[in-house]
Image (cartoon, rainbow, N blue to C red; front, side, top):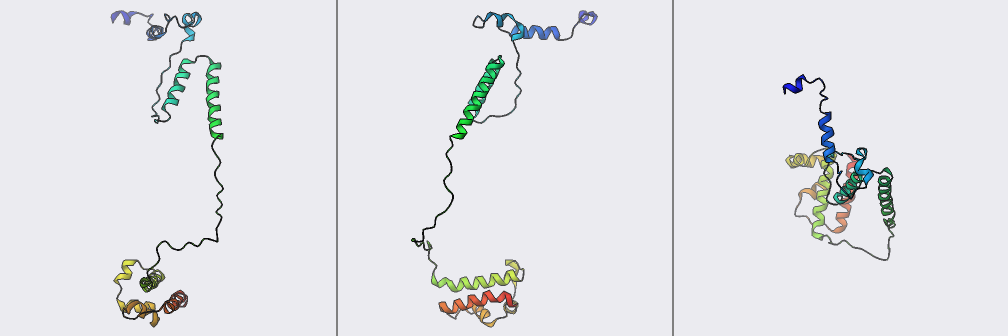
Length: 193
């Protein structure tokens, strides 16, 4: 330690890094050509600090590209590989089939009924629910607020005696024609009030 402190010729870590990089080079690899093995400028150290996680599908592609970039020190070969991969991607995009025509052609010869027909016994209940919903929306009430109203208040909101009877009379039976008239009265109800 004393030697290093008194030595004015110390060059920092440069000598250490030069020796480290020299030891990582493959000067004894006979599979490399002589001009590559003997010329230090042909060797490059790559620090891969990428933190991204590749997916299962794209991992082989990313790994192969990393290997090509790492092993290809020749710019011409590197760009040749990159352009070939780009060309393959373009061809793959052009091969995608075109979508079918989105227009829907109606076939008037087919008659499609509801999959589940409504029970005629529920018609009255549905008309009653439609009336209550229209009153609730007209008076800007929530379902809970409407449920907490007294029957006299709801009757005052409805106003029409026929519609009041529809809501509160359980004993009266309505024919389909009468229910149609009630629905027309419900449609007109909001316009009068």
